[in-house]
Length: 160
Image (cartoon, rainbow, N blue to C red; front, side, top):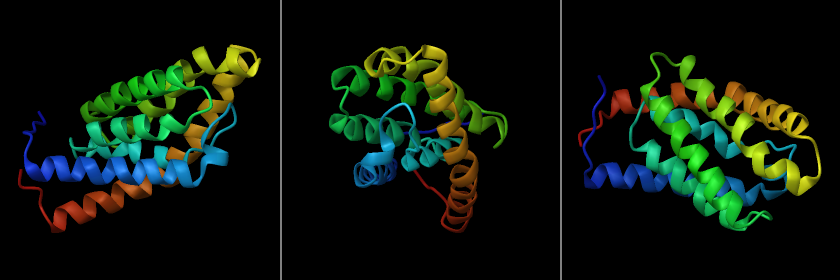
């Protein structure tokens, strides 16, 4: 069973992940919001599998990034909550491939609840669009990022 304790290093790793997530989303804002989105920062949502500090890291990064969302408070709270839950489930995943599923599935199911009415499209259509965007970003970028992160932390073990 994985465990973690909160230390200065834990907070620093979470802060760096949150900052990277926020900057990536804001720098690529044109493709980060809307029903057809490829939020590149979502590739970081698989990091909780390797490091518990990524749970608050990606959740806070999403919250800060969504401060710039055209949907306002509903996306700030909704998107951040979905990301927090999916990060925890990713952390608990039994293997790296199952770890890819929570951010894909939960975003595809949850985000369209508030996004579909805002864009005037049917729930199912927005669910497919968001899910496909998540699948592409997480499968293409997330898995290699997870592998790289695991290699880095194996060379520089985390000592919280």
